[in-house]
View 1 (tube, rainbow, N blue to C red):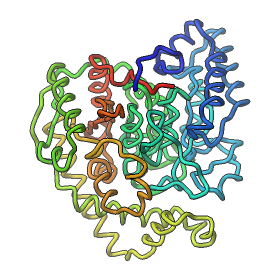
View 2: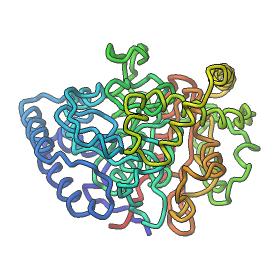
View 3: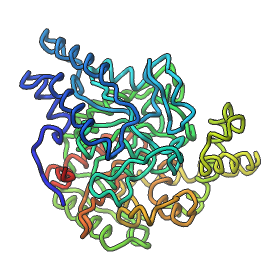
View 4: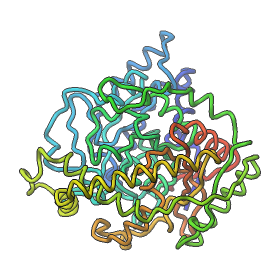
Length: 468
């Protein structure tokens, strides 16, 4: 079941920010309400690994003082959000989904955390993720539960980010995507998820899974909220030389352009191959909406992804082995079997094998970028089937065929580094949300947000929420 409920905890981030700026409500009151809701619900949902109560209340008080004295630090000022537990927050542990990291205390903030603090955001805490941000939770962890129906998958690895945002336990969340980990949880939890261009957001202070594949992004309740968050966290960073130096647009202004004139590509054959009827209906509905909004629909042929999907697994394994070299195999006994097997596989890859993958990846990236010379956006499923049950998805890391199906529409855009936005587009007959995906050229986030905001201006899929 779903509801459009108008409860404060389900308002959009930008709506709550406007109320705080107008002093119609205080950041402290909003933060207290969020903390009370977390205390009430999260013992069942398990979305947080750490709730930073005292720090959050202190940040909220400071935000209210600034507002009272005429200082507003931007569109996130005073709004409670949360971050995936890959991001270092000074004075707190960073677990990264791994039991033996939970006692370490960070001595500095990740760049994105520092930028959130400078923007006046209130950090409620750190959100649950799968072990090392790969496919399965550590055996010692209790995985988050889908607030729509606890018998269904929450997506990985940003499962806590998805559950907390969908359940009204924060107004937006920082997440990351290496093979689909913003997009799967966004689709499974009925959210808007933005995976920016690789390098658009600094990775300094964010624990790695696979450095050249890791994208730091956001999960929110609307495209407008995603633009507000991205505008704060994006940009160059001396701490991360791979962060792009291109100027950061005013995303909140640019989304007002609407979808008229945008060229939206669709590969009919690729989007139909093994795609279930419910997901296909969502794609058809999205296309019809974009046509009505004045977008031009263009049939295209996307580059074959079979080799790229296969290469992603090896590419990720090699880079995961590098990321964990200081603790694996030295502390092998603390690792779950799935992550350990990935690292072992990475150690077994030869230098020539890896170089062949890198060369194929460069060619694939070039083909994808060339495609965006004739279109502005590409519309695809997030996955070929609606959110699966836990029984279906159990031990995902041990089911290579299922992983390959899930990755068909997600990991190619991690391999190419192109940005994507996931939007809610419908429901199954069992009332589980279904999302779809738009991809764009490098640094095409403005087009993604324009299209997303236009779609959400005439639809209400993003305004449905789980029944408490």
